[in-house]
Length: 187
Image 1 (spheres, rainbow, N blue to C red):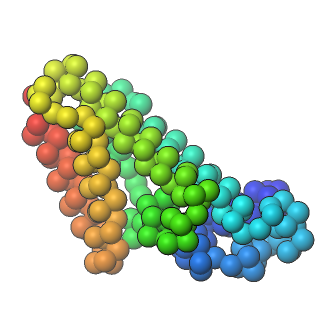
Image 2 (image 1 turned 135 degrees about the vertical axis):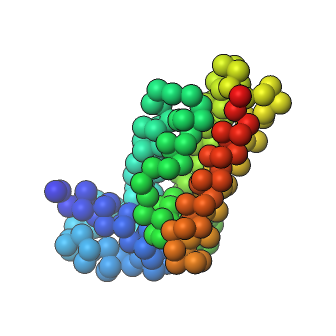
C-alpha cells in the first residue's frame, strides 16, 4: 500500500476512534508507519489529510448505503436492508460521530463532506419512499422527505443509544422499530 493510502486509511480510523482533536499528526504517522516528511510531502497538514479521510469515509458510507438501497425489492425491503446491514454499532457511524466534533463542525471544509453525505442519504431514501408511493406501497399521505429524515434520525439515534448503553441492543431495537413502522404503513 502506498504511503498516501496508508495516511488516509490511518486518519479515517483515528478520526472514527478519537475525533479530530484526538488525532495528532504524530499518531497518524505512527499508525500509517510514515515519517513526518512523507505526511507533509502529500498533505499540507492535518486539516488537509483529515479532509481527504473524511471524504473517503463519506464515499465509502454512501457506496455501502447505495448497495442496499439500489437492490431489487419493495421500498420497505430496500430500506430494511439498509437499516439492518452489518455495522460496528458501538464504534458509531464514521460520519455521524464527526457531527459531535466541534473542530470538524467549525471548519467548513471538514464539515462539507459530512453534511453532503447525510443530505445525499436522505435524498436517496426520499427517492425510494417516493417510488413506494408511486407503486401504491404507501398511502398517498406519506411524506417521502419527512419520512427519509426520520429513517436517518432513527439510525443515527440508535448509534447514540447503543454507545450510551455500551450495548448493541438499543440500536437493534431502533432499527426493528423503524422497519416495523414502515411495514405497518405499507399496504
